[in-house]
Image (cartoon, rainbow, N blue to C red):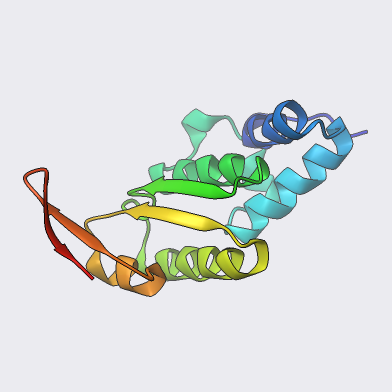
Length: 133
């Protein structure tokens, strides 16, 4: 069985601890999920300090997804991403919403990103509800 390293280990632990997956199944799920989020396996063997902010954001999302939640709170998860990576991540989340019946609470300052995912939006201004659509 391959030894787990770096981000792969961190992500795989979620499946082991929260879902009771065996180590090899968890590793395969971690590698697959990280790849779906645009992180190649070679990159995920690195330690967190060797990754960019956007790569770390995607690794954190992968960790959350391996818990197989019914509701996922995403707070500024696209803020450190280039436009192409952002669009791919939003498309992936949209597909997961349909495939897994996943509910998202998507917190962002990026109106276009919210529009890409939202069924309903709420706009807050100084902590108060300013608009709801």
